[in-house]
Length: 103
Image (cartoon, rainbow, N blue to C red; front, top):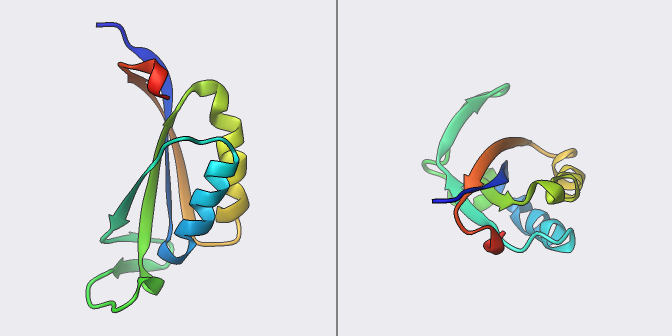
């Protein structure tokens, strides 16, 4: 089966910034993404957990995008415009997809 090169971008950011991030991605031409809740983790500020939190204010989400390599710079510019002033991590991985016309 033939595969096609793509980029997988994952952006972990505070839940309250989800709408601002996804709006920036859409404005940059990103046509698809998946949003996942982050249950907890550990970083520079130590361990944290979503357990016992009543609102979204203390939580995090992970926004995952799979795009064509030539669209990566526009996505990263849009994401960094939101992430640079907030808690967040952006990762970029090489991946392959089966149906390139969907990305």
